[in-house]
Length: 196
Image 1 (cartoon, helix red, strand yellow):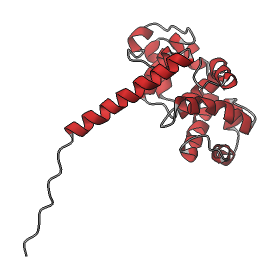
Image 2: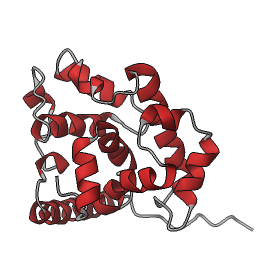
Image 3: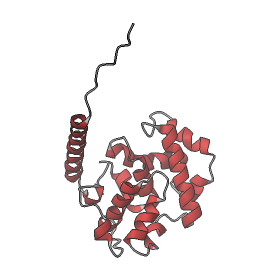
Image 4: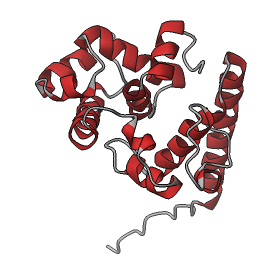
């Protein structure tokens, strides 16, 4: 995975399941590179990326690590809370082993359900995660092809060139959605004037 351009950050996200999930948790309203540099920064600032150890920390310590300049996210307070909640869920529900989310899934529907239950993950991100673990990690749960997205996602990004192409496509898609929303928005009528 070449998602950040930083070999150390990319290696961490590629080899540590908790780092991968933390990166996806942070992948919201910031560039891809910034989101996936997050796990390495968390490890540098907290001394660990282990979900069980993070879950035992004071939430204020985690938030402090996110707020220390340069902040780890555009919204450091709320994202620190989400990452703390994510680590707590991994610690409590999966014994601290994030990979159990996919190694113990019965099938792709169960896998998507497991991802969707994680703090900071919604239905769409859960669907993307099915694609990521299938295409990037080789975890092919039964039915994964029906669940994995048919549109371009980070599941399809392996190189810098692919990441740049993906980001260009994503920007174009968002611009198209904004344009469509503007076209369907009803025109504002002038406010009614009261009689005197």
